[in-house]
Image 1 (cartoon, rainbow, N blue to C red):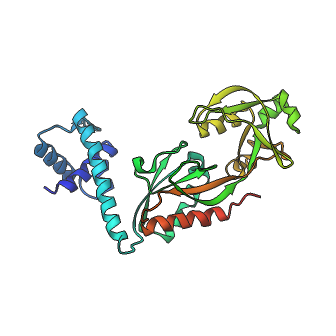
Image 2 (tube, rainbow, N blue to C red):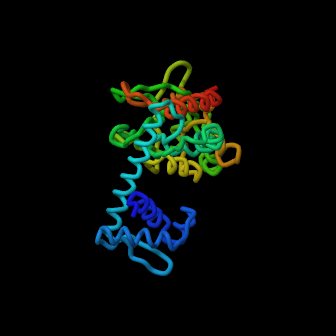
Length: 299
């Protein structure tokens, strides 16, 4: 038995929840998949799966073994990719973290073009609205929105997001539209809690000065998607990137308000560890991000 091949088959069975679907993914027969899993269980002397006619669910031991298999196979892929990178290969895996809204609105819609130009590069995208530790998470790089304050990281600015204030038609019908910062005393906003626990303040550019305005709120959230959903539901004013939220403006679900009081454009940066030779594939992906954001500059 080729144990690595057996591990790959077992991982697909767990992820597909049955042998037939795993066989389809692996472009092989269900008989082969069954034999490989049975051989693995025999070699280990442990039952890995509880089987029914429709579903295969890992046992407690099987779940632990699955998690270790995933980690081992990922390490093997990385070893192969690093070996290829040593000769300047443009193939292999790039592990990157980015906020959910950035991924959904900016990066993922453009990825077909990236893969068309770089068919041998694969991406492992980790969605995180906080700032994960690159070393602990095994990341090659990460996209950050806002000022990068962590010491020991190289930050390369790839673009900027213009930030405005938005309200849904339902909100405007209920509260009216604010036109000046003094109007905000009669309005409510959706509050956003940062990972530090601090509530993000409501800031506006008034002339050349940043002005912070207290705003009443009926709801506090700590997730970017939920924050936008609250704004769409009319639960309060929200602030966000024009590139991310203007799609909702075009669909009629949001309107821009307080246009004369924008926020400072927020930088978008790629961060990575210094003094570390990056594989060519990582440089290719970072250069692509620079080109992508060059077409979405703040007005």
